[in-house]
Length: 431
Ligand code: DOR
Image 1 (tube, helix red, strand yellow):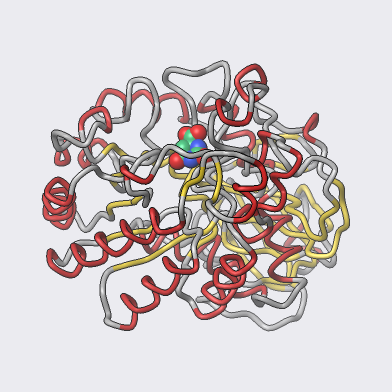
Image 2 (image 1 turned 45 degrees about the vertical axis):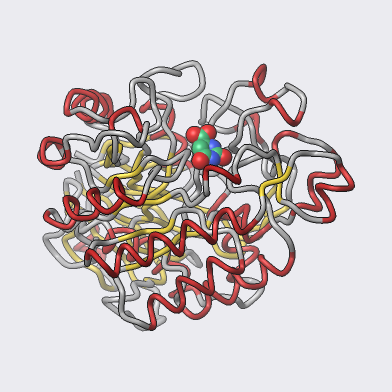
């Protein structure tokens, strides 16, 4: 099948294109030509006029919780992939805190089987330790061979320095990162950030130093072992400063931030709405300012959702007892365009680098190009469209988003990958 995406501005941080609108000719899911096409060249093609829109390499969310296996009532591999396509993503990495955890080749095979044939590519992150308990290292060689792109005990930090040291030594053999949820266990267990708001609301606190301590430990062990550490969902000023210093030293340390950690502060908790409860918790304006600086100067490499579906019944509990986590896949591109691009924190090219290029570099995956002969793997954006988030339209099986009814500027319009296109709420076969 012949497909033409017409009149797009191409933005690719590595390939570089001029601002002139171009057409993309795709035959059977493969890029044939990128240029201003003649009538002859487009004859017989299915055409989409995308005047004024931007074409970027397909976006990659490296921090997604699919709840399969174990909690298919909250999300399955397929509903998570549908939410990804609808949110502007052609690929995701899924975290291992499923039931059972992703600590065996069998669970990786199951996830890969469920994702097969979908527009969205799914890359499992395996547990660093058996059942994420932090006691015994997972079978990393077997997990790597089955397709793991990184190792993590996400939900918690790897329990001890000794286990982390060993995990770094093993993962280094495969050049895979250890993706760390940085939180000191002895300071964990609260419900929100420690500060004036936690005192005012009377909720048990999690101090920011709980994150900073583990970031520091991990950086020191990355230096000692030469292994690769990726700091997940960075949320504190202290952590940003530590990662900046580690990068200045040339260490193998990278980081990601979620949209909620740059778009919200713990002031939002004054309503006691559990859709503002997540781990790490929302922090203060000083932390958000440090995160914006970190995004600007490259200390923070990626934007990732930490998409964490939870059932309505569980989220409706009292704040203290509700589970941590919020949805992110279907709002994060709009939030990033609104809060970072339109507020001039990042250029469009920098934003695309954080969504499409850096996650793949960290996970050793090929970055999509617009070269003839390459698989079409594209995210199309309307950077200026004003729209209102409506959770009832989400493809995710869960609805726990604090961003319902929020007005955003900029949204994903379409994605193309694996011989499929998602456009206007529909999957279209291109082969
Ligand atoms: O808020 C969170 N939710 N943080 C985590 O680390 C885990 C996640 C989940 O799986 O729900």
